[in-house]
Length: 249
Ligand SMILES: Nc1ncnc2c1ncn2[C@@H]1O[C@H](COP(=O)(O)OP(=O)(O)OP(=O)(O)O)[C@@H](O)[C@H]1O
Image 1: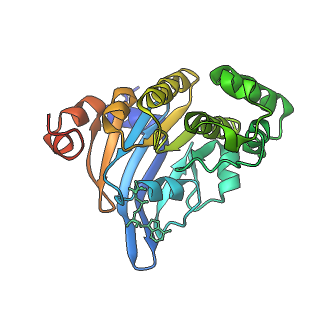
Image 2: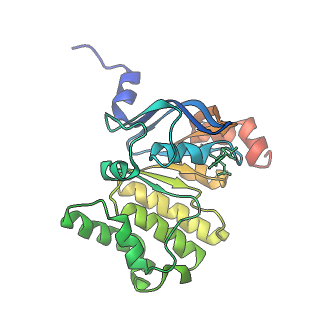
């Protein structure tokens, strides 16, 4: 038997592989042919300035925007330009930028909507249990209208709703946006706990320093391209990232 080479091990464990992804909005080329992979059990950060193409990338993975070209393989199956509802059922879920919760529905109804694609009653029951264990506050507030929650609680609800579908890969778009520093810390603590629940994650974040505290690896995007990639410690120490996002220290 021949020994398995390191690169073969990585290919085998890639939960998602994206090749030559391009996204266009009319004449705007938001994503210009990027390659990346997300391995099972990882937290992968997508970093970069506003307009770099990070959200477009996540949205394209879950079928919310069309890919102009490229290929996405998830869990061994090609899912390029799949329908969002099919991809949720396959285990790929996005918690979108701006939370997009339904403010006039109760917390419980918002969570229920996250489980719409789950057929098994037992799986739904397990999801309720897991979400309420992770977010006791959502259990306390389950009958409250979601629009009356604080910003941090609304973010927890957005993540909780995404978890109701039982994702294997959870995409988090700007989970700390607009939240007070103490709440941001709680959100990142939650992200660490989610990994302990075997959820693989890709995170788009402006809060680079905190994101790199929890991430294993990251990709830095600029003008629709990946301009740097590496593990979190490499990213933390690059002069480029230091200068651009971490105040040059
Ligand atoms: N629906 C859209 N229609 C037209 N252009 C868009 C649309 N969405 C994004 N863009 C443009 O595509 C480019 C990439 O935007 P995208 O939101 O993916 O970047 P981002 O890195 O996530 O930035 P941000 O942090 O501001 O969301 C930008 O130039 C943006 O203006």
